[in-house]
Length: 338
Image 1: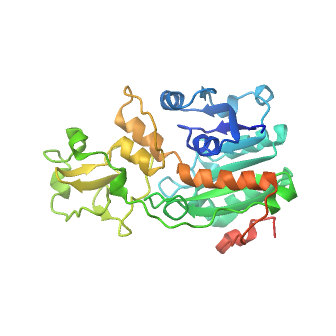
Image 2: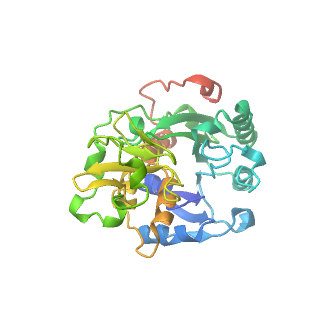
């Protein structure tokens, strides 16, 4: 069966590509990111198309290879709670990168796309940012569906991570056949994804380090993931890992903490990758941990992406829906397939 050709924009370490290619139906023909260190991790984990490092605003659209489907987790800092929520007015221009994506879609007219961003994209600027994005995509001739999915409910991974996913098709028939995946039961405990305690490097433990004096009086249990929030420790009461963030490797902020028989420590980059759904990732030995934490925090949950990709295939193949795609809240208004 002929492969569906994709381009992977804002690719990072290839999380979206991994989820799509794992279905066996998609083939990546171009990948782009701005961050040079991502290339070390990306290229180490994929054969075939390698990561092209360039400012997307400088990419020559006319020279892009022919493709059928666009994938892109465009930068979320401009819309995130963790950032300054400047949106399209972001001083670094990250909010406006969406319009470069729209330009690529307009010039190449692929059959469809998947875009991913933070949950707050929906509510930013009282919903105006999200409405502009949807109107732009619709004006390009696409039917849209969007939904917020939590990784622990839709990816069977122990991470409380809510992200918004936007799927678009040129064909009304395809959007009418598409539905986001249904929730599934979480049956993976975070401890199953941790490395053996006798293999954890001492550098990940806090004993005899400055931060230890700030956290030593907290009660850490074996079955909970904690998070250092600059000034205090927060326990995740759902028994899963808090949202992995890009800044969890800088200055100690947002670092996930666990307790084992050796003491209190941060999660290793490999453990964070597993909690993002990377089952067999190869991490470069010549990258500092802060870079790896940032790459993983900026990535996506593989299993959620794979489930969406499978439903995209079903829509393209014209397989009938077996259940109604229920939408809640503001997202009731974003779908064209009603």
